[in-house]
Image 1 (cartoon, one colour):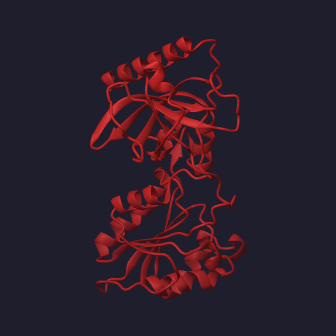
Image 2 (cartoon, one colour; image 1 turned 135 degrees about the vertical axis):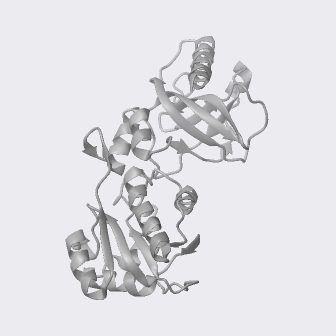
Length: 306
């Protein structure tokens, strides 16, 4: 997949033009995927190249909510769907464009033959453009517009906001259903206090970067990929109240009972499957160890049934 990070004409390898999926696509959930896959299928049928047009927000932006995916993982997911061109200018490059400037720019720069979007897609300054306006602007240009119906979960439209709310409530199955894949993190393993080793339940310590959506604090059934192997695991997310008095220090610690080795500096994938219990302060370290051991047994039993 070729990544273009500024507004500029695409150098296409053939003359069939492109089919462009447009949107922010922050979670690549089932609704986003329907839009992107629609463009990919249209491109295959019409001898065009599948493309995605999105934009990049500043790290401190609150406009679209907390992040569900890292940039690298977002790129990998979109590439896996068959997209050949990924256009992602800074938001500042497009925020002042009129709807007309936005559409004509995409059609011209992308050599677009078809544009795909969701029912709630907006574009242009102050989000003035709608799917209906998109059709009006594209008709005289001979560009097909396909508006993809919003995906549904439990009879309501799927959205990144709903996924964040599910994660905040610890409803991992709902979040996973709307994502169309397990909610996962892939952050570098960092050195912690070493308490897990002392207790005989060594954990990998991962820190959520600023701006990322966290699930509800508590203990989860997870599985962790190390190399090409998946291991059942138990993950604790929170402030570690038993051994830590600083409520601003949040850690994500995962115990992988069937693995031993040094993972410092690597970035294993940890997928979340079920919420077991909220964080709590134990009276003794033995009680803490028993809780971790119990969660690990639950995780192994969970994946033994899968």
